[in-house]
Length: 499
Image (cartoon, rainbow, N blue to C red):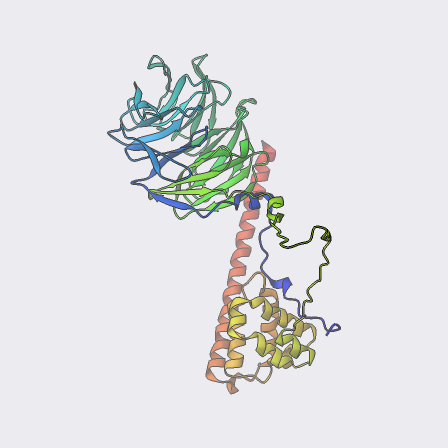
């Protein structure tokens, strides 16, 4: 048996994804716990302090959940109309939220008391954030204005009116209490300095802006709108550093994870993409049952919470990593052992003998019984579940120049099964090259014999001819498309050279 080389099936198996440290890290979350709310989940925010409660803004309330029990522990319901954008202060003691009532409300998280109501906007307020000094609140409204409020005096410090459409996205600098950024449905992103009381930067996202996020350094921010996430450098005057186009539907939310080393984006395409904050390459993807509207992640990546359009909240928690050294510790009891019993420190390991087995088709190949070997790999459970095994045998028979012998003299079901297999997989990227060779040999063998075959066999040959014609038309269409794309790319490169 040692001198016989088995059929190599691995060359046709489907290539799996590369297992990277990020794949391992992000796959350690448990199965999601789904919680149903009433209406769309507008915003998710985690408290920065332990035990990292998370706030869900939905309908006419902001609900605070316990991350361990996944149950509501506090309900902030001082809203007559829809609430928007409930977010915690850095100490976790206060929470601010906007809403359809055109005001910004400030709550004490511990007592649920409404502490302040900031009035002045003329339309719904969709996003509210505390500045990094914990003394002010920035609000972003559908009245096309951005306002900065003083918590102590309950008064508006300044208001900016630079947009021409609804403002649905905003962010405050992590390093300065005076720097604000807003994104509107006019596709424009504005940066303001409260000290100078004017805008200091304007960039165009070229799509309605849904979310804005500062990186921890404060010198770079990201904007999400349409199917793109764009990266902007503040220090170089708003230079566009990168365009991230990994979603095929509108990107709705952005978040920072892994202490600033990873960026998360949620989209209506039901995916959350995770990017490297240095290269902006996609490192992992999380899938969800419905379109993602909001996203939150705890400071230590322990929990990811997403809100969806149908009111579902998905809560995923990281599994605790056990120390490998602890797993090796075992309790050993030596009952009735003598005082001078010597326990050897080294065990003798006896390796288990692995018995080499040979598949049926390899056994027939070894005996040069090619027709029987082919019959073995045409069984339904092999053809349907492991087609690469069948194709590997086809290739081995071609190499041995035994395929004609194996397929000749067949009719009825044995021939029909081979034709069905060829018709099914001839368009496959992995298997198509070998299948096409098999089809050519099969047509050569049965050329001029079709009249003598059974009706079902002749029908399958007709279907094969039709399938080959479809593949030929597809290749022609793709070739035309490739030519068109090359012309477009060449024109774009020429345009850039002129610039």
